[in-house]
Image 1 (cartoon, rainbow, N blue to C red):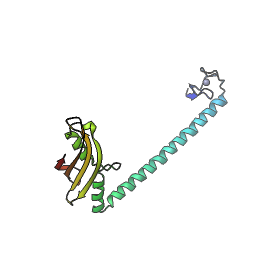
Image 2: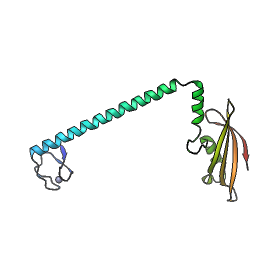
Image 3: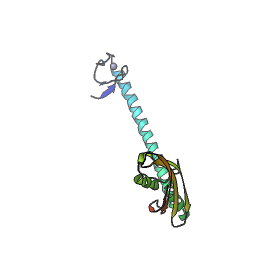
Image 4: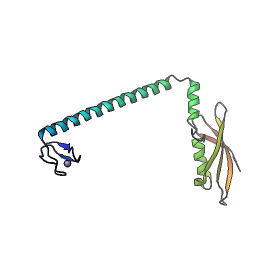
Length: 161
Ligand SMILES: [Zn+2]
């Protein structure tokens, strides 16, 4: 015995039943055969779809690995720097984390702008943001940090008021 979907109400029923116990639809061996054939066809289609998806996915991975493997040191360095910054607002992930951890009210943090100066061995990252101070007033601050090429904060050079 196997379970099939009733062609009328779509609920699961036994393929040996003469009637659907839910809606009373009359089942004949021909109808049951047809339902099973359709189901098999669908399963095959799903399997092929999954296989195509997996193949495309594998191709993308291979292309990605190939692109990284063939990158010049300059391109790798550029990518490592780009990954430190949020593509949407330009903020620096690690510096934003650091600022939030050290400000009076982290939930009041609003990023304004961030830019950086490439010093070769390290970056100088400058972030301007708005946040509440100890008196509950919104103030604009600028933090300047020395950051290594992996995005780690090496030193806070200035926490301006
Ligand atoms: Zn039914």
